[in-house]
Image 1 (cartoon, rainbow, N blue to C red):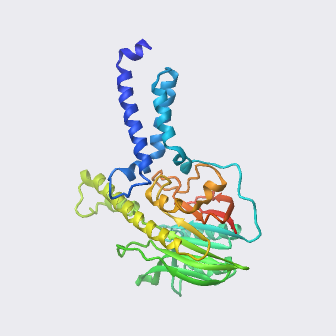
Image 2 (tube, helix red, strand yellow; image 1 turned 90 degrees about the horizontal axis):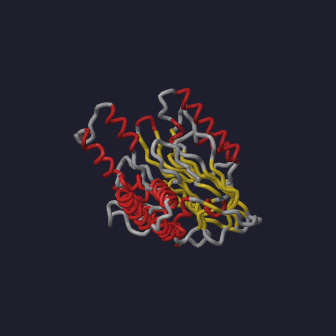
Image 3 (cartoon, one colour; image 1 turned 135 degrees about the horizontal axis):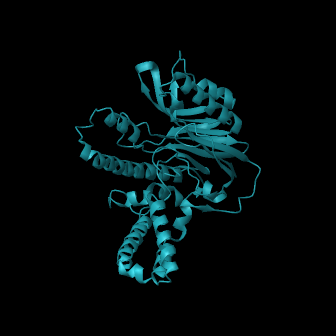
Length: 370
């Protein structure tokens, strides 16, 4: 203990502790305050798992030295309350099963790997995705980063999905690219009739933003459900990364300004997602039917985006599972960014996260019942 004090470590560690406490407290604010209000908040929400880990480490160290600072650590952790259980599910009991069930699968398929440099590799990935969907046998299939090429095509997708689902009932919104007659967007397939369908329009979309929200009213037996398929604002880090690496500057960026540019892109995406999420959540409130919202939100549970849905809907993963539930497997450690939400009057159980890595996202599925 004397050696610990001799090197001045207690003072340094206290400073680190205070900064960690403040970081965690600001994490708690991230879901509540719009990203354009305080620049740093959404970044802290994104870094929440790291900041929480640091605080837990600090708690262990102060506890070993039997310091009152351990009590400060515990207090800061307790202030977070239920927010911690957005990132870490601990539910030992699922909802009881009911009669009118719908198996729902949501999957960002990354364009079925169409841009794989190896044509054989792209076809192999696409076919593995099809095999996975066929095995899961969903009643409702929500696909983000959907790719479809008009006939004639040597990379068929939609006809294969018709065959897998055993139906041609589907709703799509996509951007059409004249080159090669390509379509990029989202799609919703159903084994049951759609009595209505539509779009939730987003503002401030560029020609390269293929982020959309579609919905459909689906009837099973005597019940009607409204399903939303959502793909909220992407960051497009990967395309920028390869452009910079290839020596093609973006807006005359220097190496020194690259980090600043990336932070700016993140901040812009945070703001766009916040508005998109608010618009979808408000639209869902007008639904005359029980609502299910599925998709790639591109944001974490400690975010303003997530909070727009969590205020009125039930997170099916938290309702049925145990663990972290990471769905993103790309280069950034984003964790859980794909969700299935539903109206509180509905039940959810048997939530699954895909094990295979066929995209930069894992598919998620669960059973929804009224």
